[in-house]
Length: 107
Image 1 (spheres, rainbow, N blue to C red):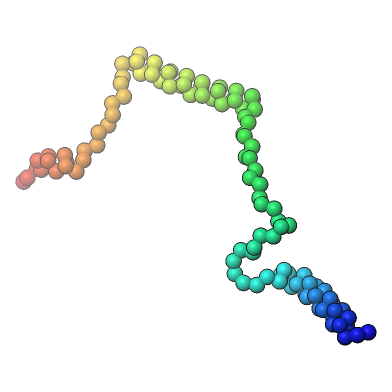
Image 2: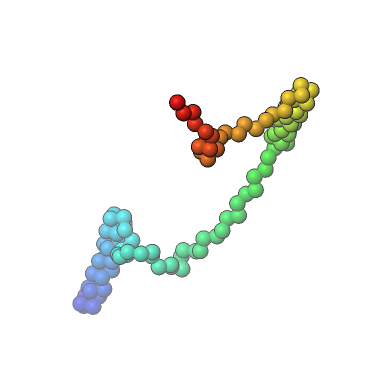
């Protein structure tokens, strides 16, 4: 065997050992910070179209009945207020300016 073939076999063996070392170490041989450069084997990510949410007919019916019950409650309260003659008055709390404008009692 001549020295050129021996060196070729040694280089092949060294590259195999380096690959085995990289697999065992958990690295792919790249060093340094930053994002790895793209290779031909890695394809670009494909945007996934989000699926549209669909509500079942039973769910729609349940929501519709609940909303009808809410509106019936509002109408019933309005009707009761109309029949009793009471109107809801908004309570106005005195502010600091109106409270200080009132005359204080002096002794």
